[in-house]
Image 1 (cartoon, rainbow, N blue to C red):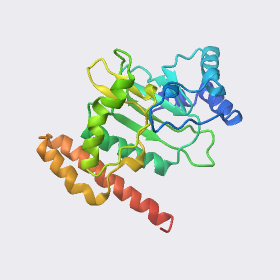
Image 2 (image 1 turned 120 degrees about the horizontal axis):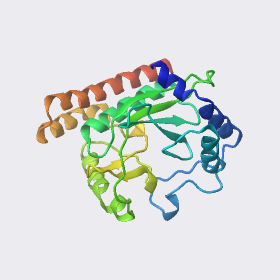
Image 3 (image 1 turned 30 degrees about the vertical axis):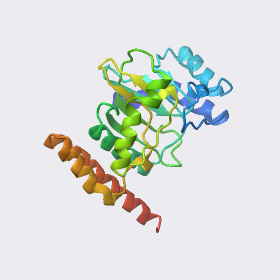
Image 4 (image 1 turned 90 degrees about the horizontal axis):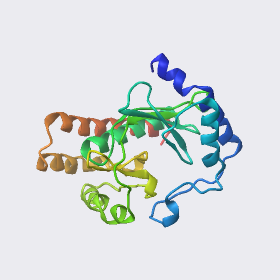
Length: 241
């Protein structure tokens, strides 16, 4: 991680936000199904109101924030964002999450933005933030309830079922965006439990062939698939499972 970005994510603003979250944990909403109340973080969550105040005090411009992370513009690159977690993600889980994102982005690039990096921190390294560097999607028209329930992701869920993928998404409205490129995106971090079983690699290969993926895209999809399961096996082996 280059020095400019390292200083950015270790700024006094990020330290104060993470310290505030540690002292005021608040509720952690879980929204596996649509509800009208899932559009935003509840007002009684202290972090929701605290982040803009802290950002203003430090003169920091933020793109957005929620119950788990704050989104910042990437330094000198309008095509990327930096998402900093209030809490901690272990390096092992960060790597698994990265390859899960990479798999979904290259399999369905019109719905999952690119993730450039995910960085974690050890349990005893409280001063080092966890987070990710992602493709920035610029919004077009507002997202509707109908888009989420009956739009592209309904069709995508059916495709995923046929591929052996149990697509786990948080259906809060704020996790979706109509991009200016005409695509409908899911912006939240992918759950590694959405990955297909390793035995379903053949289904993925058949899908790639049937849809005429170029060889570079095929390499990215299958390479991410293989690396994810290699890391997962190492993870379980280190746990003695």
